[in-house]
Amino acid sequence: MRSIQPVDPTQPHALAPAQKLYVWLTAVNVTALLLANILGVKLFSFTTPWHWGDGSVFKIEHTVGMLPFPITFLITDLLTEYFGKKAARQTTYIAFAMAVFAFILISAGRVMPIHEGVPGTANHEAFENIFGSATLMYIASLLAFLIGSLIDIFTFSIFKRMTGGKLVWLRATGSTIISQVFDSLLVTWLFFWAFPMVLGQAGATFHFVMTMAFTGYVLKFVIAVLLTPAIYIGRWAISSWFELQPVPASES
Image (cartoon, rainbow, N blue to C red; front, side):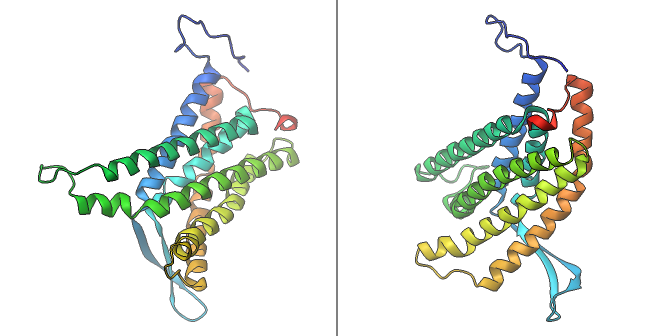
């Protein structure tokens, strides 16, 4: 395993391999979170061959933002694997802080006087439809991300110690599946029930909230399973390109 060498103060960009890896993984994590929050304004729905107990068709309904969202859990798993849970939590806090910063800038952009009629630019209605309607979803998603990521890091570390550093697929998929339960429930409950109630609006029914959370979780479950090979590919790339080895299970 390569050790982290002191950085030449005259060349602060000349990072050691481990430092480069940490910067890149953190950058991907931040990007995936920001895109998940911005894309979250669009909902999608498609039917499946299955049916509920009452005979109605089982549909997968969720926001487009949840497509890049599982990438954040893959990144935290790799960070926990190679740098430990403290470094993974630091990346989570950085991503959360950058998302809050982006939210502040978006809010500032919304109150700026708009100049309409220029080809290729949005009018007030279009701009507000995207960024205004996404405000509550953005906040709900951020809170769910923070809590879900911390749970993911915690459970990944537990699984790693329990398996003695073996069964990578179990700790990667298992930790994501567990953390996504809390993420799916929290973001759905906040956006469709808690926030409307606080604003004096009619919140969604309990059945709707649970249905959205469940169908969203099913999709996240499938994505988590499909992403399992990605952590093996990531481990191979990190070992081959950066010559790093995972943190011992006893130190996780």
